[in-house]
Image (cartoon, rainbow over all chains, first blue to last red; front, side, top):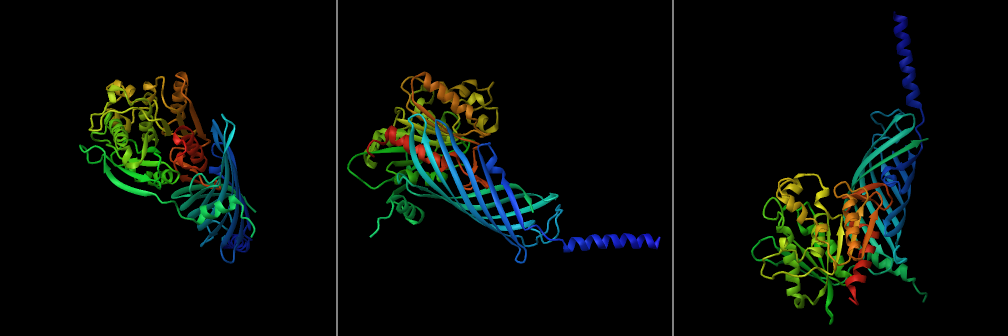
Length: 185
Length: 293
């Protein structure tokens, strides 16, 4: 009996050791659910993990159709985001402690260039820039293998700039919710 | 000295620069009988010729706890673009804003603006209505129901004719398409069986007739509150009487949520507020009532 108990303890200790020394994933590629919602666009990000500081840096890209009906519009967006995963551990996560999972605080900068077309009169109505700055909080889980799911919420400022010069720039605040799904490696 | 590209100069001034000189006058009563019947005026820099104007109407389910503050930025932007903007308040529900109260108030506001056009240097024949959700409904009513007896106002400024153009953002056009939810029951004074005439008379589509002004509909095709069918059916009705209208649809756009610039989030943003919707709106107004501004 004591041999069996010793075997169980040894096995458990062994598993814990393997977990403790396992390397975290340093990269993540994610798809933004809001970007593909409506099936008229795609948005993705690449995130790089710096475990010593528990910080990640992400690059974001989006291509989206932004108008249909009697108008057509296309928007190309890019952005950057920094996140601080202060615990780097998460409930439901299958990845070792020290991975970019769990609660995080983030800051995001983003910009989109869009162009609008009047289909009935076949006229371009001009281009615009849509700039955004945001602060956010989120929680990433990795419930199965290296799959990650990341909901987030936050507050931000948006500023529109009409490159045709017809409209003055326009700023407003906003609240938001995000959701991404990806693969860590 | 090298010439700075125009788009780069615009970007620089747009990102960092200030705004034109807009004069704002607040809390001007347009119907002395009701304390809430007030409007704010956003005037562009003065000039000799009369300017076109926009009646700006907020949404909020016709509820009295919603107010016009949310449309301040829209009104200011219209003024910066050369339009005199009138951001109006109206009676809501529960209370005496139930149909036809809120519609009568918007008509009174329009009538008041026309009666006082000289005060703000407005051309009374070049006034458009612009609103979102319940405000989009009221904006539509200003276009097609201004002379309907069932909503005839009895305010001091008297009855008036329709606006010259309508921008309806996610505006209900046919109340009969809705289920019997509280906001509708309160506004229409009962369910479909109890107040069938109100469900019909409060529907802009019921009042469409030859001579209706041009419309711009702005809506998301994933709007769960005001289905795109409202705008589509209204556009067909307007086409049947020979009225020009345009449909601006945001793919995947909702009633209150639209995408952030990089598509990472759902922002709390009206469909009217996307840069592309603004481009379509100002182009529509310039073509219909803008003249030389």
